[in-house]
Image (spheres, rainbow, N blue to C red):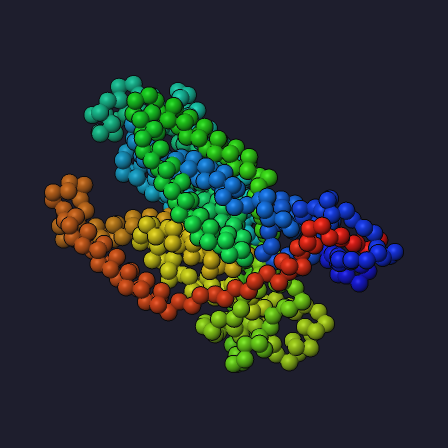
Length: 507
């Protein structure tokens, strides 16, 4: 063992007695390597347990059993999200006495924020926490924000007085206005919910897909079906919200409706935790933004260097699973050739790499370059998602397959962020359209009195933009090149010996 690098383990099978070896009974073979130090760069995309040890026996983890706990959590998650979307505008108008235009602005900003937060949470999950711990962290924030809502809606001092506030007073804006403290509590609750909702969303879908082994033909087919069932759980939450939550706040009380959502998310989070023994995990890979920036810097430094036609001359590590923790190697794809310059070795680098690891700001691996190229290739497809959220299933599946192993949560974050950015762009388009069409004293196309406007013109404008977007999508889909993923080379070396044989370890 003295000749092994830190964290590596060596074991071998023997069929004869050996005085220098110590026999380990097969009946006590562990499900994961019980070692103190692991060479993380050699694990690659091999599933690990919660402590980061490679799982050698996948039969007792993952699959549909583990995914079922995630489906339950997503149902509760979207029940709450839809309930907030559908009820908060009315709550702010009738209970907080906020005018509808201002309430619309508040909700638009909230939807945009909850849509952009997945980019942050996906980054945190991929880089540092791992998806499981990221889900746990953001779920706690989510539940705390939800628990604050029923308190704010039931405690008299946390909302303005409704004395003398009838329909006419609401319309004229003469009702008692919310104080600074009352608005602070409302914003605190709303943005805690936005942080929790946006934080959980990209991690939950990718963590669910992680429960299916991409290198198992059977589980690879099951993983393709996972996103269909995931979307069914998503829609089921919306149905519960559209019926139960709406009934509660219209027929019972706001506090009861908000309390129901808090209980649902709490139960969903507990259900997720119950599945902990069944989950498969993958190691966090460090900051993907740093790696992407390194490729750009290295390629820019070598902008005059010519990329060789022989791709085998590009730099890549071959003594480890990958230079990126938690990732397999990705083979070179012939496009976006400028970024390939980052993997071209100049003469002095060829000499130094044989002695020590290169400076990643000057020389990057092919896998690292392909990580950036995968993101760039997916941007056109992602922008078409901005226009139509009905492609969510296909986008989740595409991004899970096409982004490198090390940034899959961030990839799901891009899919989730499309809705938030789309909300911002929709508001901007409406504002610009009304400003242009209301010139010279004319009524805007989208007027608050619909009969004096031209909403039909605005709908035609949306139809034209959608047609342009669809044609752009067809073009980029036609020229898109799929990544070429290698299989895990270390998986077989980590597998335990065949059952009933003896395992020998050096003394």
